[in-house]
Length: 243
Image (cartoon, rainbow, N blue to C red):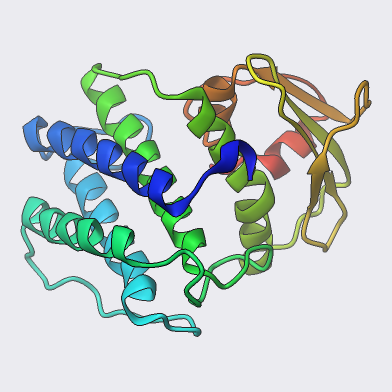
């Protein structure tokens, strides 16, 4: 993985992002809209993060090797109390769970190991922190190294999950993701009906779609939060992005 990321580093980032997210949702009007999540209010965003953590952390807690189906939160649960309970659970489980512990994971391109969840949880809290802060117009600039890891997760893990559980891709072609502030670059190959293939880019490689930009701009762009500088086939772009 780029940057030598470890479960300890992901846990540290989670702690930072979780604190900022909790601060943002704690002072927001629960009924206020979250523009980057169309149709959502701050209540919806808070409940989403609580539910995401409850579900994800259960794999770390139990080491289950099969997909779990948890009951929904109790009707009428107080969103912030629910979130706080899950954040407390995460603060306990994330540092205590070895990254090489066996656990079911959500992507056919990822090993069934706990570290996949450490990574996913850190990046989900970062994205939702961005949503909350952007809605409040109090956006904090993040870290390029963490954004690189987020792009790598999107391309090498989440794309495979998207197309293994959803409609297989119909697009055919290649995409280059080239960062301008750090040296990383990836090429994604789309073949109809198959999970996309991802590898490091070769110098001077030509592809059907080219995406360039600083790591943070590209990362949040892949999630539909920011515009992305791109040239080439738009159908490849729609196959590549996460939103």
